[in-house]
Length: 178
Image 1 (cartoon, rainbow, N blue to C red):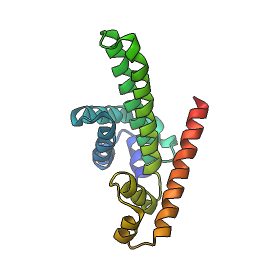
Image 2: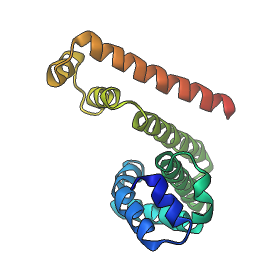
Image 3: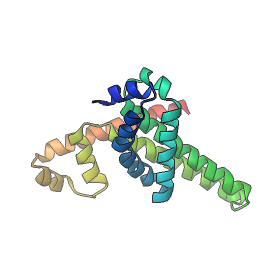
């Protein structure tokens, strides 16, 4: 069965469909969220929060087009809420002086930007995503990527240019809105 069929059954309170969606997405969400919060325990808790919300909203999920996109959007929102809550909590208990409040806001904005970039990369075609990650995360040069993937250097450069264009466009649109 595909995600849509599981979501359909989930809307009818089918626990097995929920379990299958949980088993399929929980590990990926946990890794995704851990990349931002840098804590496996917090990532696990936030991932569980996403699935609690999925269960609570199960009756309305049949209206969504892509469960995959929807659940990653929920994860993004949970992470942003976590950072916002963390920031507010630190200010409340007096751990931040007024001079440090700006850097905390900047940190929040940087984390949000990082999350947007990761979401954009996650939606890229597989080849482009792999090339981008080898370039940025593994710090490989274009020639090394080309050799590793048995591609021409020009193909690698084209994929990187397209990936960066997608990211720039997303960030431009995002920051125009806010």
